[in-house]
Each structure stands twice: as C-alpha cells, then as structure tokens.
Figure 1: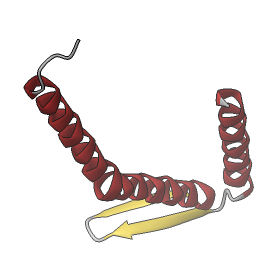
Figure 2: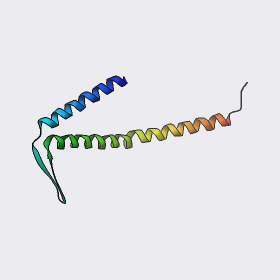
Figure 3: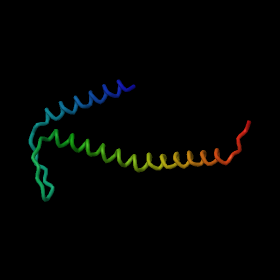
Figure 4: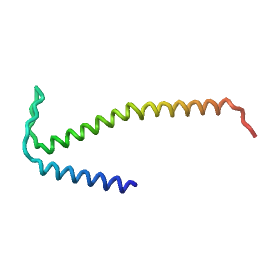
Length: 89
C-alpha cells in the first residue's frame, strides 16, 4: 500500500513538472503591496498546493480533532471504570 501511494505521488509530481514546463509563459501577480512575476504553470501549481494545504487543515480541524477528543474521553472513562471495579478472580 505504501508503495502504491509513493508511485501515485511520484506520478502526480511528474505530471506537475510537465505541466509547469509546458506553461512557461510569464505572468504578473499583483497583491496590492507586492508584485510577483512567475510562470503560469508555477502559479497554478502553487494555487493547487495552497488549496490542498487549506483543505487539509479544514478537515483536520473539522473532523480529526473532535474525534480525537472523543477517543481520549472514552479512554479516560474506560480507565476510570476499570479502576473502580473490584478485581475478580
């Protein structure tokens, strides 16, 4: 499974490199105070990477962290219950 993930990541990286190489036209990004000149392919790849990063953070905050708290609470409850029960032989 890890090998499959690695190969998929490698394939997507190769596609990204080819995409950036084929879209080498220089564009200007103006952020009011800053202005950048870079290739169109690199600008699109940066936007995709930033979107994936923001999406991953959103999923983590919205789903993973609440579930982690529930699991920790359930483990604490189980430990407390186990400590309160007398030993059975």
